[in-house]
Length: 249
Image (tube, rainbow, N blue to C red; front, side, top):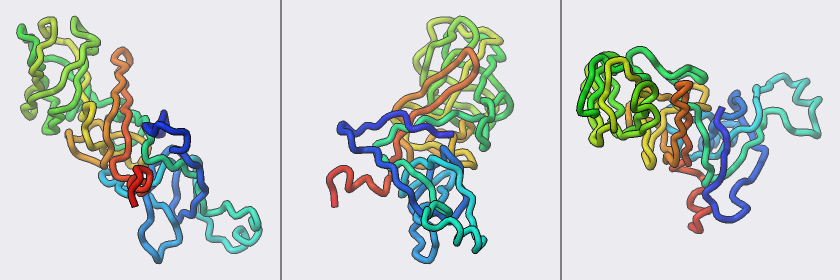
């Protein structure tokens, strides 16, 4: 699930909790966007994996739509059915788990297209990682970290990808790359502007290409290279409250 870590807003009023109307099932920790359909019962809806424009906030509880009339009558005056608690914050720094596929809680990929690269040949110059299972997904522009071998813990930016062949970096690693060394590649860098969401809208799909996905601005990437895991911190790039929060109309 996505987690609200902090806010870029310098004051104390950026994060607001509200209960809003929904017309779709939702799960705690997912992203929600504004429902612009005037003939639809909800005020928020699920985003798309590659489109979270009109970001509203982070859903705090599971919601299952109730249509049974007796249930709707019995819950009055509480008025919580078909609603969700949501955290509004256009400056939110959200933490997404990096997943090796479209489904949340999927380990980083070790098959085509890999997140975890295993060098198939040595490279004395420390700039080229040969790995056939790079596949056709180019993460050029994203970060890369050594996870096994002499360069473990060193982070570089991917600067070239040859499909089904290799990944290269412009700034060499301090040690030669040996066959069998491992690296983790991700399709994001600090300041990059797209994250492909998982199908439950609560995680980040790490086998997408660089620059593909919903509008989120990446502020940090945290690698756990020992356990082959990572999380990405990002802020919504297109919030429904963005202009007003920034002092606009």
